[in-house]
Length: 376
Ligand SMILES: NC(=O)c1ccc[n+]([C@@H]2O[C@H](COP(=O)([O-])OP(=O)(O)OC[C@H]3O[C@@H](n4cnc5c(N)ncnc54)[C@H](OP(=O)(O)O)[C@@H]3O)[C@@H](O)[C@H]2O)c1
Image 1 (cartoon, helix red, strand yellow):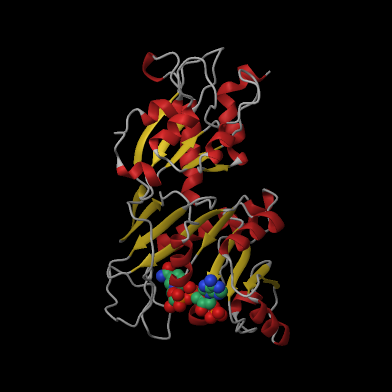
Image 2 (image 1 turned 60 degrees about the vertical axis):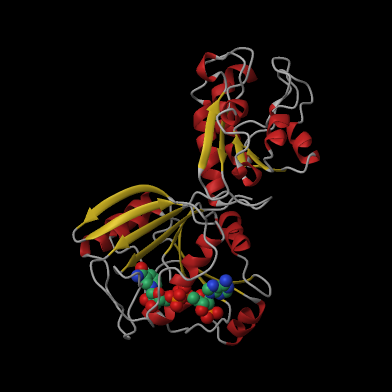
């Protein structure tokens, strides 16, 4: 199920607050950073905020620069990104600026919230997602029904917390402002709960006047059949590794990465790595990990091509090596075609041994690219 690229954006005080408790909105960013935010807004298809932020800040959520709006229109996009909010209760003020500025709007809510919005309507498309709001259904609806490829989420804290804890954020853009709030009742950026265990990947730091922008990418694999945003990033890396393979007319070029449950990369590899003309990507990666490493049992193997089920060059195919290593989850982009082995079904072998196999076909084109000469 494809989801949009989800970009969380927030500004925080040095003591980690999103706002203070006064009725006025606390301005944390600097003028140049507000302009950067405007640029990011202009680059996305939709912007989402929680109902709490509509109540607290009454924001317009616009692209302010006329040049950026004109560039969107010239590119065939709507002048303003779609504005999205979520509310369980449906208690939304129909007079809020959110509804009366910018382009199209949509509210995702619960059945009871939709009922309330029938009595007190707002100027927006209302989508009821059942008794509770399911973020995956919301993201699927944005992608499939509304063509949203990039979604910017501008808070508040309860929204950011859920998207991060559920592994649905592709990127976090955090601005640290040089001031303190010092009020324990003020809203925090992230609430308590279950976050990924390991470290996020730092993509960038940028000084903007007196604030610092930090861009991070979550790294934790999904669980079982549930796909996390990080799954897509790791699979994209596997596809990049496939590009490094020495060319061959008799074997596929494949990349693989093994990642622990906390998002730590354990090893990576690619076909024919290190002048071994027959080594496969998963085999090369697994060979770099101590067989007794306890993290293997909850690790995920990312492979640009489905792990092989049969091979002549070595006694054990990669699907078997994965099972023997104790790995219980594999994410791949492309099922093996009949080019060299007819009816290869590495995924079937893995599933038969209790391994969860997730195929993300949106990466198939990238996985095939270094193999185009073999595919006719
Ligand atoms: N510094 C920044 O960058 C920044 C950015 C944005 C906001 N803020 C600040 O953050 C504060 C607001 O944050 P907040 O955490 O209180 O509110 P919020 O995250 O904006 O919104 C929370 C509301 O969203 C709805 N919601 C959240 N999760 C839901 C779910 N799973 N299902 C259904 N509805 C759901 C609920 O609405 P209902 O109550 O209607 O059910 C909930 O009360 C404000 O003070 C604002 O100024 C700061």
